[in-house]
Image (cartoon, rainbow, N blue to C red; front, side):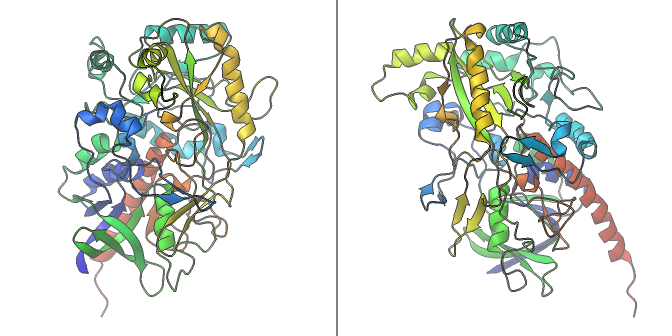
Length: 535
């Protein structure tokens, strides 16, 4: 075992939380170490090869987890620099203002957060600027108040999606431009061409949702945050570095060391502030693996809430067949939240609808019977309109992450609040005939969407929830572990509830909020070190 140097801050994980936090702290001059268990995702032709991605599972982890029935499964997660943002769909939405309070649902109550929307609003604004979010204020009637307009105008609809928007408005609905994190040449030249669409037209299919990005147009954590952060000499990134456990001092109050496994063996790295940003499942697993005499049930687990309350949304990817061809090249530009809080005849929330990236024949072949002709799949793809439906699932202490004696991850999950999800599907299906589509919806599991199975962990949150009461939460309002002086968690683990929108922007905004807190704390620590010792 080797002993590495000591750092002011060690961040474990380089995705939406860890990468954003590193970007925030980088100008401080403090020594910052990022530990990433994976490697850089290579920029290569496979990035846009649907056969490799959707049939062969390129770039996904090869590890297996175990479900509540003892059956192994392959999680759809990516251990890469930039984390899961390397393949995410970059729909970056704020939580609704009411989501921060208690909300009654069909299956129970979604609990209130310990902070209000106002506390996070400035950081939403900062995150939208950082991640190049394109949108239009006021277009979504459920959207929360904003202090500033979106930093960039909406990504324009292709013709078929513009007609869909018009048809929805004709039915009395309020479709809105989906807030998207993309870097476009026309951001600097509003009169310039929409190059992303032209690129996909040349490619022959859209390569966005579920694809890595060869062009660096997608606003992922590596492109947006890590590359600029690593221009600072005080920031170091180590790849292939798996954080196995955390060790504390004799009091159990301070984490002193991160035990790291690399190809060269075991290392022990010291840090003044330790931040776990491994994702909700792996952060919980890391703290559970760090059990000790002082923390016998896992680090920061006095409340017995560590690993519990896992949430991942009730999600479904659904395909509708347009009666006319859909030659759209960038489809993910429209959202609909008219059912977010319910409907005229339903007094509980149903959820959110948005467009997905345009499907292609190779993706559809993963769903079709084995002998389906290629021509039929191609014709189906040419008329496909792809929708993503999200309904909130509720925190349940029995939906949890556990660790076996050998470190094996067990993920126990029973879906809840599913009735509203079925109702949301029915509402969309009931509109299709008036939207120029055939009157049916087809589930699409190539996005892990067919009522997303357990392996679909892209929206994982809740395993280290934050709160004011250390008896019922793992983290305090600054996402510091109640039981430790220097341990923070800045991925989706802190969520008290899951809301009905994608969690990525909230994770990013919260990382910026915690970054400000840590910058203040680092200044205090520096001042204390300068004080003369008393003899």
